[in-house]
Length: 328
Image (cartoon, rainbow, N blue to C red; front, side, top):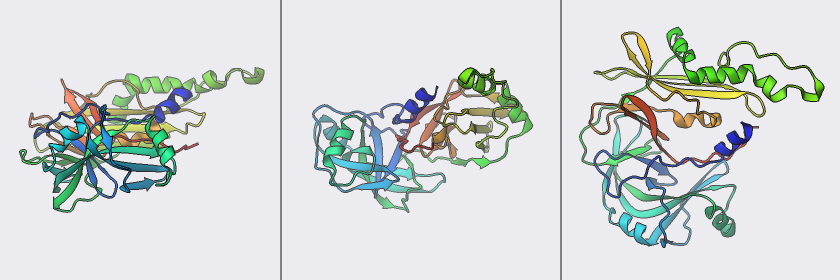
């Protein structure tokens, strides 16, 4: 499990699906920042595309650098160039917006390591092994565009009602509902048997006993957000992460609940897919908003978009991220 976990942690999260070539009014894009905003379009790497020499539009966060190269030739560059001048509403976690227009197509990469502008050989080697994203550079034309604005849609769409999530503590009812899920029970089994599975019989010693208690009784992180629209069913997003990892037990669960008549109904897949527990914040939504006008809310956060299909909320898009630190 540990090897798989670390392999997973090293992956780059990508957009769940490529955006259409021409943005519709209900299209949703994540916005990435270096020293300016960029509209993420897709993760395709077009054959034959050519790029200008590396420019100095980059920022460093720890040992990660975001690098931008303008596209000058190639089919994809031409298609994106046709969208120059398109206007977008750039938004964050409130109703505030700023307007921005696309000014040029670019390629964005995340560089792992302390790469300076002179380390071109290292950069080329890194890029040959990692995915890249096609994007459109944005130039704000109105409002106060800042890094707190992390998503966008094409301008001219119908007005949106933004419902902010309110933080709260778990309740006995919510905890009881969570403990009834298969994902919680799976984590409990792993917790109880962890010493036996991973340390049993070492140096001829006795078989360790099962661990007592509940796996999430001392959670490292337990978050609860409630989205209550003026009309419709309240939505609850919940996340619990517990354990230290680094050779010891660690687990996490993520759930979306519907609240009706004092009862809770699980409205997200029943699986435990939280092995990237050090990046748990990437799953956190901040607002609920009906993006496509179908009467069903979507959940949007700086790095994630949840959509409901047949009453089940799933992550439909990721903003690309790369985990580069070692918590151990």
